[in-house]
Image (tube, rainbow, N blue to C red; front, side):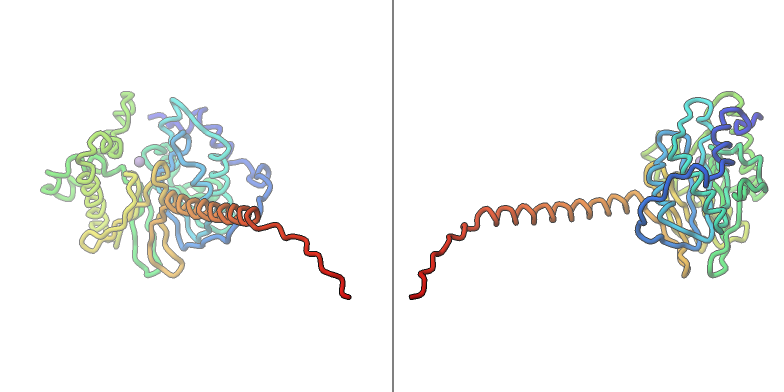
Length: 319
Ligand SMILES: [Mn+2]
């Protein structure tokens, strides 16, 4: 199996990763509103390297926050598309630099690659410019609860066979989890695209809700089997916090459409940030304020025009 990340195509990214961020960073812009601080931020499915990535919003978001721990939960760089069309502009570079800067200034950054950046799975356990690469991870929240952190593509095959899988034993389940990786490696070798649940869902929209539900349940079941309190993943581009029989399932969504992040607040408690909605809301408020200010200005001008011109009064000189 060839590692596409070792190929020449990947050099622009590697050089941007190793470049000294202090050298090329643009001059600091005027101070903006104070940054929000979180105990941890989880993002995935940013698909950098493609035109569909919302690099603008992601860059804005990363600039607006600070955190103790940052988890990149897979499909951060879309390596699969490196072969065909590779889209990389300064904004994509700025995002990488931003993450490296966070790693440099005290944020613990963990990168759990997904199926679109699976070439990086070969570097598990390595430290890449302060970013720790892991096949999967365990996150401990403020209350001491443990969460299994993984991308989630491991479950594509499992969900496909979910019906009969419920009746088989533990060993078959584990086998199938491993088989999916092999299955897709073979597909790739044959030049076939990755069997992606999210792509599959788009073709089967009618059953999407059912499939998402099956995926969530399968991942939560495996987290239970591993003795975890919950699970944090991505892959299906559907942000969610829900419970499956005491197991907390959390998905951080994506930065292609909804632009969502999962955060744990400093004082504890998880929340999904809907950044695209947040920005749209702020813009609407700004537009409304501008309109009001314009209306007031117009009123003032109108009032000035209507007001009678004061006539000069001739006062009789006192006798
Ligand atoms: Mn994925």
